[in-house]
Length: 388
Ligand SMILES: Nc1nc2c(ncn2[C@@H]2O[C@H](COP(=O)(O)OP(=O)(O)OP(=O)(O)O)[C@@H](O)[C@H]2O)c(=O)[nH]1
Image 1 (cartoon, rainbow, N blue to C red):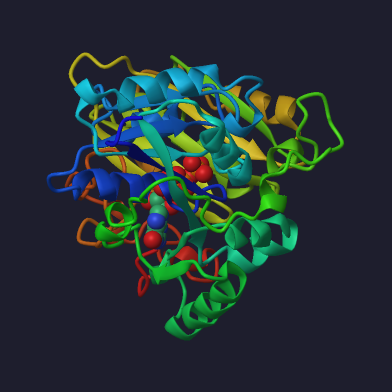
Image 2: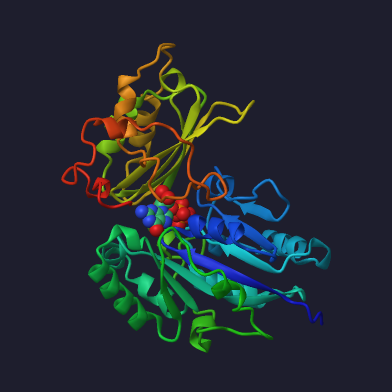
């Protein structure tokens, strides 16, 4: 038995709660520790993996297209763990970022069942979106169970809720999380020691009980995971070489159906802004664009993953296709609708795409009063007094 077992931490949490943001923070602040990351995307385009710092290095690997918890066999995961945990890789801790619809318990079981002598289960970290907490629990009561088996819960997006509200949520989470440590954070900025000091000695099962670990006879839905969060969701992956028109895209986004909970990816607005691609994130009613300069030689593509429940996927795809524009001329005024959702440059928001640094100093027309800017009634997220 190798005495130098590498802890493998599962980083889970509902769609858009801030897992990738937190992982980027860890990678950026890891000090002398070398982190290996395994990123599991739900969609077939690996948006999360693309936005993880150090993605080009050999210490980040991506497992796309479907929840890991639904993998028929865990051999691909084993292979990646083998690679990252091999003593020659020099990695101190491995973090698996689960997809936002994964069943954390299944992932933990997979790790506990692994015969890899170089790894040991290092605990479950759950990220909670404070702004969406009540609504998510209402729709998905299973979230309570996820918190109940966590070893650390990060109540993220503290900046998006009033402090009394955040305190209330912290209390509820603490009640559900039992012995787990519960910490508040904005943009996933947790003390990294919380992760690295938790390296376990010997095998541990954290807060999981034998009942949790038992392979209960679940009703199946073909993939054997009926009742898992992801069984109620569908996803659409959309790629376009033709740029999207800002006006039709904003019309689509501004009227998106309730069920369309998560959108992420990159948009090419072509001549309307030839310098930048626009990372886009929607989580519930929250919407943000993050302009970032195209890398030299980078193919100009729009790549989006849209995840929702009860969404008419073919109709949505048709609407997205209708946003494609072949017109060579710029529609600068059309960009106003987009720039309303660009964070002001001085806001204290890290930039997902680039090592957690602030985004490029892209002037935001939002400052000069683009339509609806900061209108808390039309979008409470754009309250100029809040950063989120
Ligand atoms: N205001 C605010 N926004 C945040 C915070 N943390 C993350 N975000 C934003 O929330 C959006 C989703 O964040 P991600 O880190 O991609 O979330 P995720 O959990 O990895 O998402 P999935 O993998 O799709 O489940 C992005 O626009 C982030 O910038 C926070 O503390 N405050």
